[in-house]
Image 1 (tube, rainbow, N blue to C red):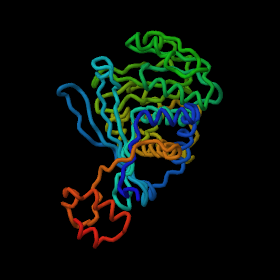
Image 2 (cartoon, rainbow, N blue to C red):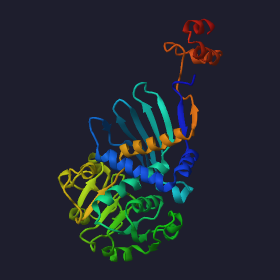
Image 3 (cartoon, helix red, strand yellow):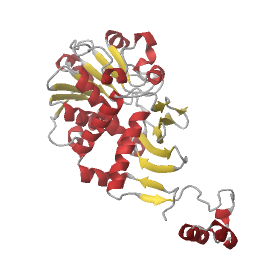
Image 4 (cartoon, rainbow, N blue to C red):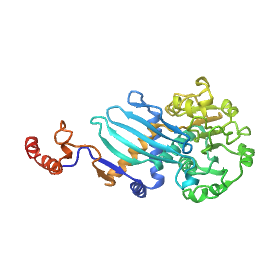
Length: 372
C-alpha cells in the first residue's frame, strides 16, 4: 500500500520532461486557456485568495521572500513561496526570482505536491499578459515594444505570439549584453527584436500597439519609459512593479490610461496602482475577462500585473497533471504517517518501519501495537 501522506516532488527536470512531451508552444497554449477560462469564470464562492505577504529586507542586500496563498474550496490549497533578489543575475548568476509551489489537500491537510515554480512563474506571467493583450489590443498583428530584456521578456513575447501575430519588436535594456542576447533566447519563428536605447524607444513609442515593461528597476528610481508619444490605442502590460516603491510608468501615463489591476488590493500596495486612489482604477482583470467591463479596445490601457496566486495554482495544477500522466516525479514521506495517530513517538522506535509495513499489509492495528 502506498503512503497515504506521501508528497510528489516535481523538479526542473520533471518540468523539462513534461514540456519535451507536450511541446513548449502547446504547454503555453494550455496555460493561456486555463487562465482565460478560469479567470473569466472566476467564482469568489469557489476560490478564496489572499494578497501576498512576506519579508522585505535591505540586509545583506535588497530582497524579499513572500508567500502567495489560494484555496479552491473543498479541494486544494496552493501556497507559492517566492524570493525576489534583483542582484542575483549579475552577482551570483542566479535568476532574480526563485520560487516553489506547495499543494495541500483540504480534506486531510496533507502536502500532496511540491513543485518547481521559477519557470512556472515566468510562464504564467507571460500567459496573463497574452490573455489581456488579446482582449484589449486593437485587432490584427501587434507591433510590440519591450522594456527590459531579461527572463520575463522571453515569456511575454512568446505568450503574446501564441494569440497574436507579432509584426515587429522594438526592445531596450540598460544592460546591452542582456538586450543583444534576447533573440537567441526566444523560441523560433518569432520576429527578430530591434535593439535600441531608451531614448530611441521613447521617441518611437508611437509605432507600437503593445508595450511590455518587465524590469528590475530599483525602489524609488525614475520610471523606466515615457509613453507620452504613444498611440491612443496603446495597450501596456506593466509586469515589473511588484514591490512597494518600485514602479515603471510615469504618473502622467497612469492618469491618462485605464488601469486594470490583476488583484486590486495587491496592486494598491505594490503595483503601478500604488500611486493611485482606488477610485482611479479601471475594471479588474476578472471584470475584463468575464465580460463585465465595458469594451476598452481603442483605449489607452495598462494591465497592472503584480502576479496572482490563483494563476500559480493553475500553473502548478497543469504541471502536476502532465507529470502524473507521465509517471514523473519522486514520492517522499515528508510528513509523519503513524500506525496509531495518537502516538507521537511511534515513528521514533527502531521497529517503526517494520510496524508500518506490516499494518499496511494486514490492516490489524492491535497486532501492530503488540509488535511495537
